[in-house]
Length: 207
Image (tube, rainbow, N blue to C red; front, side):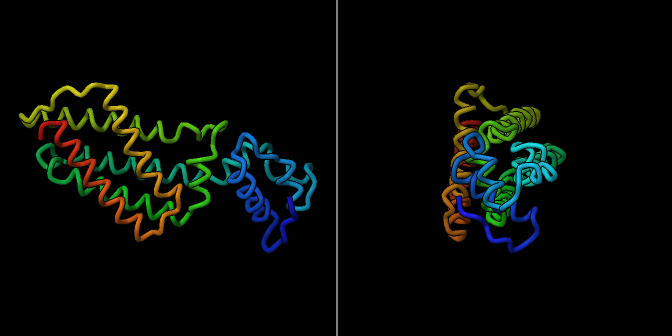
């Protein structure tokens, strides 16, 4: 690996080199030796900044993982705190705004979010999408409870089908980011995906 010219602090140069290495090889196959060498420092000097490759990876993606997850949790909480009768009216608006916010955030931090989505196997971030799926599944069940309270009960959804649909929804959404589609296209695709999944869920829930 070629040596990186130092335009910035040593820490910025470490992060720049690490992102290049992680994006190219993924966390598991990335070489800390290559990262250190490309910055022109010794391994001992590197350990003055981070204790391990994993700690370095977390320093790069951790805040973005937290933002996306917390933005999604916030949307779920805002929705559940609404009066039951109001929830069916605004469900589409709240979820659509959340998806739009996450999309724009991801495009502002594209490399870091691609690391989170594509290159985190072997780290604690590898289950990121599964965590999102679990949150959405819990939210779906809570909304079904609300529909029952309103006298509009939803038919029982097969758990396997439910998991497939929710997982597919997130993978479809994150594909836009992974493939770095032009933001104008991505914005349109998100609107179409949102309309498609909203209509599908309403049909399955008998609404």
